[in-house]
Amino acid sequence: MIKLSFLAAALISALCSASQARAATPVFKVVDQIAVPGPVKWDYLASEPSAHRIFAAQGDRVDVIDTRTDRLVGTISNVRGAHGIALAPLFGHGFATAGVAGTVTMFDLKTLRTVRTIDVGKGPDAIAYDPASRRVLVPNEVSQKLIAINPASGAVAGSLPFHADPEFLVADGRGSVYLNLNSANRIAVIDPRAMRIRREINVAPACKGPTGLAIDRAEMRLFVSCRNDVLAVVDVRRGKVVASLPLPAFTDAVRYDARDALVLAPSIDGTLSVVSASSKDGYRVIQRLRTEPGARTLTFDAATRTAYLSTAQQERVLPPAPGKTYPRREFRPGSFRVLVIRANAS
Image (cartoon, rainbow, N blue to C red; front, side, top):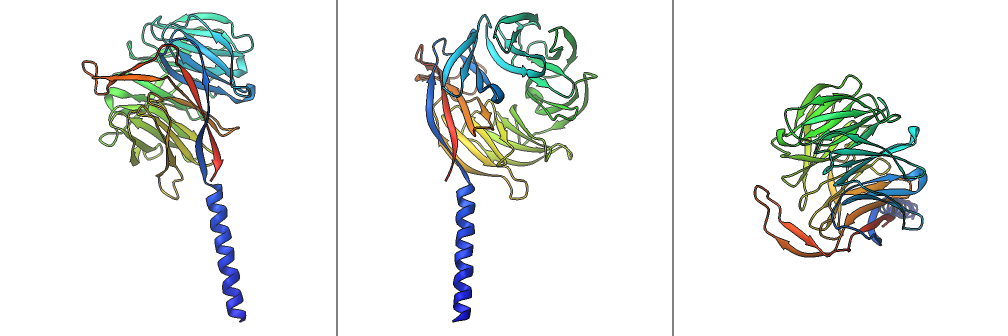
């Protein structure tokens, strides 16, 4: 009888532990959408958790949304060909790339008014602020250069040429910046103070055309979305790809959630892949969430466990443009919106 009681207690304890483990597993759900007037052309988003805001690039502007009310609260205008947004709160400034104009719009984070327009040449796309070097870094796809900007004054502080077209970039907070070199299938490890390349990491053949990029700063792992529809995991210290997982379609941006060790990868087909990124447990897809076609970029607010994805209402799919592999998509005018996706316990 004692043995049976002991076994029963052990079984109950095991079931409770398993239940708690399952309850701790985050499950993402689409909980809302924020309609925003304007063009149906978009690219990156950025979050400012301390001010409860997100910034969404859209056509010729950057829309600013209050995440407490899910309402548009401001617009940074005249950003022709808006692509990326970087925030430098220490200096009270934000920066947005204008790919068509060939400029970076520097704006005041409180008033959202334009402070300065910085000429960087046609082709700026992604942008990032590196707190270690206190520089804003702008890859230029046309000139194939990385341009450094002083976040206080907006002055250009230097540039670094490449042998390939640069894409997205992330900083590790320790003095290094990692930049995808799309056409070379490599990641450049950069010293942003000296503006020099320390080394390059070859991600081929697992990853062809590295595009989106996120970083696990604790484990020094990079998560790279690739044009051959895979998510590659790169060990920075060893300088090699250590894992790769299939993605449903082209993914233009990825984000890493340090609290739950998850990677969020939105694909253009309307799928959000949630990947368990614990190096101890291996890398595996734990959820494929249906979103909407066209939702290929995102930002993530770690404080509220919320992801925001830009998209619009798709009307039809056309054959790929010359030299491209992915089909073109047409969207209904005026249908731009931001999807709100929140993590809940399962």
